Length: 115
Length: 115
DNA sequence: TTGATGGTTTGATGAACGTCAAAATAACCG
DNA sequence: CGGTTATTTTGACGTTCATCAAACCATCAA
Image (tube, rainbow over all chains, first blue to last red; front, side, top):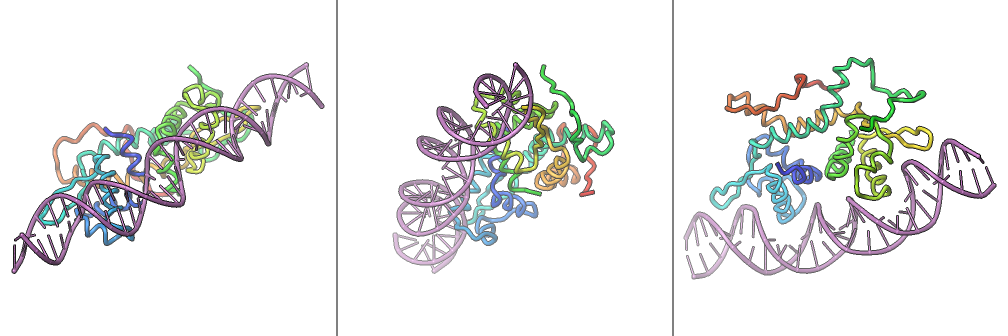
């Protein structure tokens, strides 16, 4: 998977809004453009970034280009994100450590673990 | 939550590696630096970006600054990411699309909302 | 073919980014 | 105090990024 491309694609708020928009169905480039105050050229650039991350599909219908989410990679992306983020939270919950919400600024937290 | 800061923080591979490193325990800035071929100054900049995203905790121990994951926001971040990515995939699976990949993130990801 | 419509590509520009080297800050120890 | 260690901050530099305007390509309708 194109990990770096995915994260880079997500780093821009406009691109995240595009993805959110397409969650409720595919839209043409022009229809998408109606939701944004930027030029179609800029939007087209964002489409390219999202396509490079394999998050977007495009299909020509007449004069229009219709964009939709590439759902086949969405599970891979979700799994990757969980690998980065869910691990600690799960371990937290699993270890049943009472209320780790606040760190004890006391003497010393766990000492370094250097292999 | 600082959505934009979080995504920006994740857009750099070095910062993602820092997060991964800290998944196995807290480390001092110097210990983290041993794993990267860049200057400590550059690394310190990355720490700041991760702190701005509220992903990192820092605590002074003697002359060292010890960094650790801020686990309290990790569930929020995971939920946010799932909102962006898991929706379509879930709908896919629910509608009986074949081949549900091996995603199953360990302990069933109970979709909990903000406590 | 011509004209109109829907999008993309190109070139330019200012802002943001990642990096380094060097200076600055902070804590310890003699 | 002065010196050493650990880390951050600053300032500069080259690169990447988001954006626009304008040129360009593709499709449809006369």
